[in-house]
Length: 429
Image (cartoon, rainbow, N blue to C red; front, side):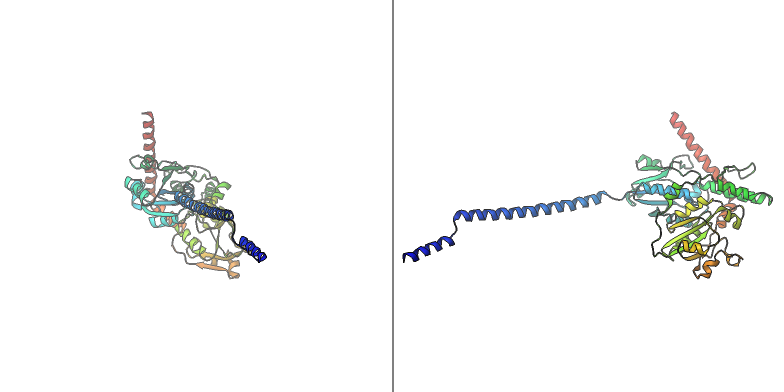
C-alpha cells in the first residue's frame, strides 16, 4: 500500500511543472515573437522607404527639355552639328522650324519651302520633336507657350548673333528670363556661303567654255578661300574652307555595326546639297532591311559624271550631312562608282537599291553599268523616289532668284553691322 502511494506521488510531480519554469518559457516566447515582429516591421519599413525614395528620385529626374529654332534653309552639316550640341545640353531636343512668311519678312525668300525643311529637320537623329511655323523672334507669348505647354527648360542658340531687322537680339527675352544657353557655331559653312558657291559655279560656267572648271572644283574640295572677282555677284561669299577631323566624323557616327544576321541594304550617290529628296529615298531604302549602308562618291567621280562645276559640297561635307540622317547606319566615304562582287562580299550586302529620281538615271544604258554585278546576282532593285527633287532642282531655285538672294545676303550683313554698332555703343556708355 505504502509503496503504491509513493509511486503515485512521484507521478504527480512529473506532470505539474514548477511555476518558475512556466514564467521563463512564457518570457522567452514573448521575447522571440517580439523580435520577429520588430524585424518584420523594420524590413517592411526599409522597403517602403526605399520604394518611396526611388519614386522621389524618378520625380526629381524629369527629363531636361531644350529648345532650338532656326530657318534650316538648305540644311547642311553646320545645322546638324548645332542640333547635336543642343541635344547634349539636355535629354530631349525640341526644334522650332521658322515659317516661310517669317523668313521672307526677316531675311528674304527661303530656298527650300517649309514642308521640305520639316522633312530635313525631322530626319536629324538628335531631334526628338519638331514644332512647325515657329516665330523668327522669341516673343513673350511664344516663350510662355514653350515653358508651359512644351515643358521647355532652356532655349538654345549659337554664339553667332541672331539679329532682327531693327538690329535687336532675337533671344533677348530668353536671356533676360535666365533660360538661355549657348553653343559654339560650326565654322566653315553657312547657307549664305553655299548660295555663294552655287552662284560662283553658274557664273564661271557661263563665262566661257575655255575656262578651267576642274580647277574651280578643286578649290571647293581643298578649301581655298578665293572671293568673287570684281563684276561678280557682289556677295563676297567664299568657297569651302571646311577642315575635316576624325573627331567630327566620330561625333556624327552611330558607332554600331550590323548584327550577325542583319539584312544590309546599300545605296550610293553624290548626295550633294543634301536635300529632302535624298532624305526620303534613304528613309524608303532603310525599310527594306536592318542596316542601311550609304556609299558617297568622291569629288573626282562626281565631277566626271555631273560636270566640272560639281560637287558644290566637298566629300567630307557631304559625308557629315548623310551621317546625321537618322535612317543611315553607316557610310563609305569615297565609295567606288562600280559595285564589285568583292565589295558586296566584304560588306555582306543583301540588296542594292537606286531611286527613280536621280541626276544620273540612265545608268542602265551605259556601256559600263555600275550596277551590273548586283543586277547579275539578282539583288538590285529600283525604288520609286517619293519626291521629285535633285541637286539641280536646288541650284535652279537659286539661279532663278539670283537678285533676291543677293539682297538677302546684303540685308543680313546690314542687320549684323547694326547689332555690333549698338553693342559697342552700350559698352562705351
